[in-house]
Image 1 (tube, rainbow, N blue to C red):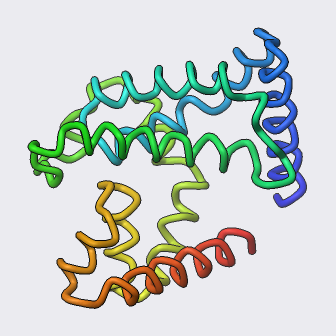
Image 2 (image 1 turned 180 degrees about the vertical axis):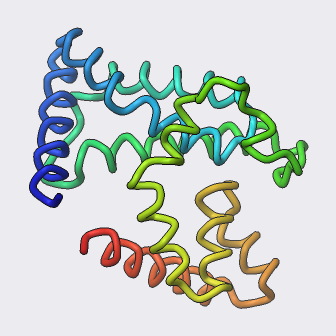
Image 3 (image 1 turned 60 degrees about the vertical axis):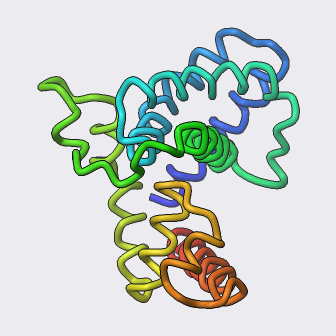
Length: 186
């Protein structure tokens, strides 16, 4: 399994590097291989299919323009793309701060009868691994990580919600991310 995953990561790195050299075929293949996962990230954070689709489009426009800045020595292509997706979704959430972030609708209520890319991503093995690793965190840290990364809450907002000092919240998030990385890499 590790060999296959590593080979897939190397192929994505190669496709992203080629996209950075304006290779349209590589870009199309990169989109085909990654768009469902990134749509899942956007849907999970934005909880609105239309907004998620708009952000996904923005992501790939940015990828086309900035792929040349990708450095495989610093992060994998999937990490780079996921981070970009998360950041763009957070930007969208902050633009619409007046809307309530905790919409009571679930993804199941927003998705039509056809499996969407987001639904496919959530059912993927990687999603289940991430959920398993998140479940291994302490409850307060798990909730803080989820709110930070899936709803775009800031450290200050999280510290206030949990009634802890800002430094404590930053430490929780940092240690939790290190624990997640160790869990996901094993």
